[in-house]
Length: 329
Image (cartoon, rainbow, N blue to C red; front, side):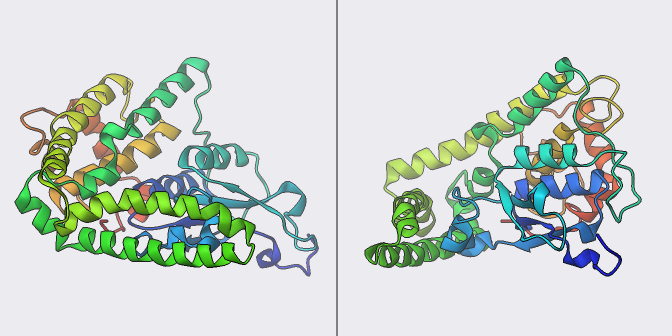
């Protein structure tokens, strides 16, 4: 790049995210831990509470309608004098793998002076453990998004229905209905993209309709009973079982999952764990892991998990991302 070209003219990666999205925290942590400068990427918010992730414009970027998404310029277009071309990375694991590999201690084209440690394990055995830990906290049985919407009885359901959770369910339904109508209108005029997303949006509408009926009193007694039972199961069995497995997987020389250095697994675990603690305490940020133990039906949190939690509370990346985020879904 010539001296007359501004750094601002060079195409930048764009991270699509939302503060209340638990998995959106993972790449934000990764960007900080890897030493990326804040002027090297752009963060754009996709308001999940209003269903913006189902808008046709966003579905063109991520056909799954999820966040985070990282849109990165290809290697051929990372200069100001070439037309930009981009590719989309559409899930948390892929995004963080890319961010880790794209920056090393030898990277010179950067405005940041912070170190760029390798977050991936150096051995096959280490990678297997990291992959197992990441898969553990992404299990459907410990899904933090369901946990946020869960209710174990009528009283808890009434409280959530009158809170931001209830508003999100209603707003998402309205947004999906609007986007379905727009897509059908586009499809009627021969729009191939609109035709392709009608079925997807209708499936999302049907899935949301289940929780919408629960939250608005439209569920039959049997479905409501199943919802209460599933909610109790994730708190009483899913979360404590996951914490027990995590306790066994964290290396003895901690405090992080793989020892004394942060790894990719840590980013996923602390994002998940901080959300679970916040939901247990009904506040965000929540700094006391004891709030979680109190709702585990007598199950205890192990010393290694506690040490992991304490170590992360003092990290700058945690303070700048999760610690500053006051939003709960």
